[in-house]
Length: 540
Image 1 (tube, rainbow, N blue to C red):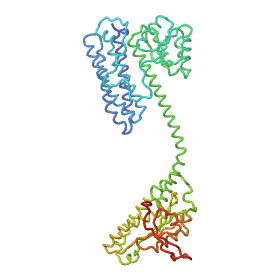
Image 2: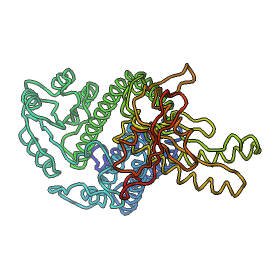
Image 3: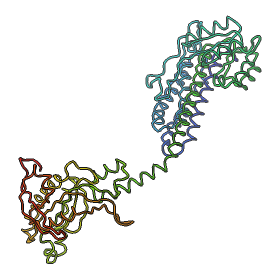
Image 4: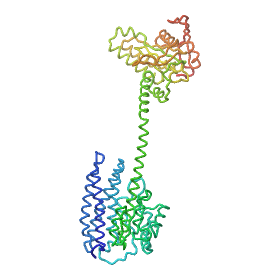
């Protein structure tokens, strides 16, 4: 057989078209590579183009005879290599979200698979072997090679193997033949015998593909195409025109106004399967592109909304960081984080609250600093500060004053505390124990230092004070002075507490009355008590 009616000639034409798709889309992706993220595509796509070139040479050997089998295997092997390569690239491209590139890779893969299916089709194999074979029962297209899964990774929707096809032909026999062949290929088939009936079907139900006869009474295929082009709901449905070979001039006109492809009468089953599959694939790709576009538009809308509030959120974050930086100067890190996360804007404003205040310092430090070398003084202060600083964080106290060996902390502000007086006494006892270990070691180095604590409980005014660039969180009230004076009167290793503190903690601590003390700044003598030990093992 020769000429346009030769199946081998028709097959070669179809394969060259598909190979052009493989090489063309591979080249387009290579040309679109920008930046290091997609550089990994270039060399594998060069291999894809080389495989397509080898297949193109082998296609010329597809003619009936003994060498046809060798040519078929060469084409199939080349396309298997292409599919494997695209499978590897597809996974990498989807991981980095390059959706446009992924769509072009799908086009390359689709063309390669159809080429492999065409050259392996039993009917085509028999014809190339120059054997008689009545194509009355066509098996479905062979499955892809097991080297690669048949479903590409991570598309928004699974690629359709079949679809709903509308067959439009005024000849009942033509409709019957087409319907039976399409059903064998796994498609759902709907039929119409006129152009108007076809439009009614398209309006009533979803259709994936239309096989449309060109020459029909009342409304021919060309007129149906013109109506389809004007209807946005129909424009994305692919139409394959059915024509006799002497209607080629009219077919060119149909293609110009939107027909996807054409099938000549009588139907070649291989071309029918290939062109129906290709058209369904193109529709699927268009659907994916639309879905991707919708996703991009939604993301763009979300991004625009985020940008509208970005300035406000940045300003809020900067303000929060500033507040946190201030709070960390006099609070333990966990307390500072807690206050900032609570978004309480009144935290640093002036207010009045009942608090427990603890003062402590080193006895004999002034004399020591006058006689010791500066390096020795700094070493002692470093050890002292490390010890008491760790305890302050452990007991979650607020630092109110810190200078040299003197330190003031308080409880119940800005973070509420269930029993501030007891917490202050607990901290004082822990300080005496740990600093006591330091004073013992210092004495072996010739430093005669001791440690004392004073605790008072009462109301005070608290809040941020200072000036721009130098703000502190301070506390003012008699309770502060009382704790400081009790600390002054305490002997090394002693914790003196006020009368009100005693009333708050006496059920948990054993206290010793040291009498009334004359304290600087107080008109009357003030009762004071020494903390001896916890009662019944509690409190510490």
